[in-house]
Length: 89
Image 1 (tube, rainbow, N blue to C red):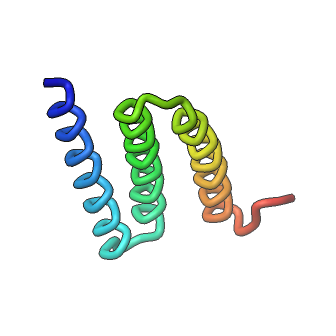
Image 2: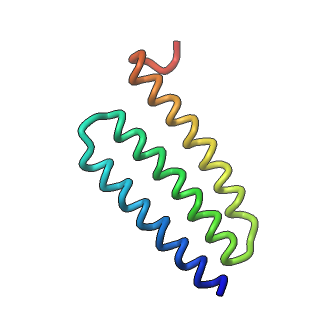
């Protein structure tokens, strides 16, 4: 029964990534693209954690933590670039 739940979660997060990718392609403004990209990073982290649960290993949790940190820093850097025009002062 748990296997079906993991497969369903894979399908849901995969569909969410596809919707975010569609939003990145068809968005009007840059802010919407950044938000969709950040949401796509969150869904990718969820897929990594689900994959780690399904094969019962811990390495994917560490990879998810690294991607989470990089996703946060890149979102903050891009938002700062949109507001001020530069990242490093």
